[in-house]
Length: 429
Ligand code: SF4
Ligand code: SF4
Image 1 (cartoon, rainbow, N blue to C red):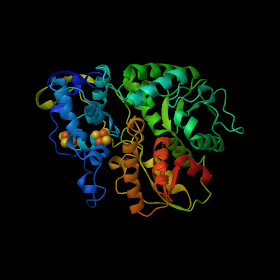
Image 2: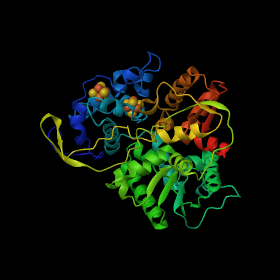
Image 3: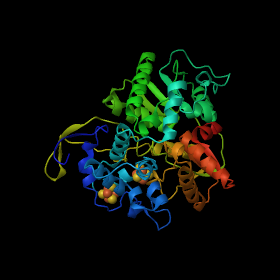
C-alpha cells in the first residue's frame, strides 16, 4: 500500500508495495558501506548480485520485479524463479538499504517467495523434496527419524526435567554430530543440567525460507507447544539458522512477539559468554591458533527480536504508530568475539567484511539445496577473504556455515581449519 492500512505480514505482498516502489537503485544493498571499505577488493555484500552480475539478481531488481508482479505486468518463468530463489535471504541488502531509506527489503524478499508458492509456481523442486522429507521423517534430510538422538554420547545423560532445553536441530543431529556433542560436553563441564525435546522435529527453517508458510506455521505451532509443555525457561541452540527460526520467524508465523514465546531463545555463544562472565566456566587450556570469525547471518543481522506491527502509512511514507525498525545493529556480534578472545593462545583477526557487513557463506535458507554451485561459489568467495588476512582457521556458529566452508575448502585443497565455535570452546575447557 502506498497509503492506508499496512502491516509487516509477509503473506501479503501488497504490504510491501511502498518499499518496492521507493527503491532508488542506489545499490547500498550491494556495496559494503563506504566508510568501512578499505578498497575495491571484498567490497560487495550481496552474494546474488556479485555472482550473477545482472541487476535483476540484486535487491533493486527484485523490488522492480515485485512491483511488476503486483501490477500484473510480469509472468513466471524459470529465470524468474531462479532470480527469486538464487538468493540466500542473508539480510545484507536489508541492513544496507536501512542505512539510508528504511525500506523493508528482507521482508519483501520473503513475501515474494510466499506469493510464488501461493501462485503455484514456487518453491524449487529440491525444496519440495525437503518438505516431503520433513513430512515423513521430521527432518530435512530424509534420514530415519528414530536415529535423531544417535549423536548423544554414552557418558552424557540429559535430565528428565531442567530449565535449559537443548534443541539440537537436523544438521547437528545427523550431519554435524560433533557440534551437538561439543555443546552437550560444554553444558556438562559447566554443571548445567539440560533436557532434550521428548520428540524433536525439524524447526522448518527451509520451509519458511522458501515461502511454504502454511507448512512452516504448523511446525511452529507444534514445536512451540512441545517446548511450553516441558516447562523449559531457556531454549538453547547451537545452530544459527534454527536460532533465527525460533526467535524471529516462529513469532512472525504465530503473530506474536518474541517475548511472548514463553521461554527465552538463546544461542550457545550467548549462554557461554554469560557463564564466563559469571565465573561459572573457565577457558584455561591454550589453543594456539590464529583464526578469524565468520558472522553467520542468522545469528547476526537477522536475529533481532520480532514484534508484530500494523498501522497506517500517510504522507511521505510516514507510518503510525511508531515502527521500531530491525536494522541489524542489535544482532549477536560481541559474545562470540569475547569468547574467542578469552581463550589463551587464540589470536582473533577480523575479516574486512564483518558484523552487519559480513558476506554470507551461501548455504542457508534453501540455497544449497536448489543452487549448490552458487552456494559453493559464495563459500569460496568468503574463503578468499580468509586467505587474504593470513589465518589458519575460520570459526562460525552454525553447522550450515561449517559444512559449506569445509566442502569448499576441501575441493580447493585448502589447509584451512573449519571449526564450529563449540569445538574450540570445548578444546579450551
Ligand atoms: S539500497 Fe535500497 S533503495 Fe538502494 S538500490 Fe538497494 S533496495 Fe534500492
Ligand atoms: S538477501 Fe542477500 S543474496 Fe539476497 S538480494 Fe539480499 S544481499 Fe543479495
